[in-house]
Length: 226
Image (cartoon, rainbow, N blue to C red):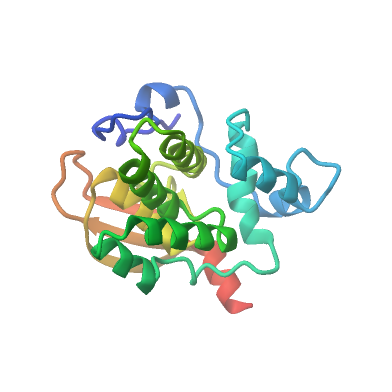
């Protein structure tokens, strides 16, 4: 039975997933074919338009499985593009100038296009905390969305090996997880094993003690081939 082993050392004033919370929970790789059927069926509790509406409304009653379908289901939509979800030049400039109002506007606009982008919710949390205060509704809502997505993604694996790789639907989410955990990659390599593709990231020395992290990126390659 797998458990999360690398979140305990992550310090934050807000509630985040911990090893204790995940103890006894099996990691489950997403079944994309089943998810595809569910998110396109308006008879399903996982119907994507409804999940999108509830997530954008910061509905914290969403179950882990519903959030998993929301996150991985985005890769089953016609407009899925995993290579257009990184931080934009405009956002980087706004953050460098400390123009937080402009940064918040850019983030919100981007999230209408890529509503499952983990990295943008992390940025939104930090920007809203600076603009409105850490205990503000704006900051709390952004963090709740980030935390729901993070929990869904990390329910797929712990990243310690290819067998327990973390499944992501775009590269930006890899860096969202790395940023949140305070990890810095020193080398990245693409490897193929048993028909699946993985990003293998070698990491700088860190407090968590992780040396390598694996992400399953097969769904991105399939989208690229299309």
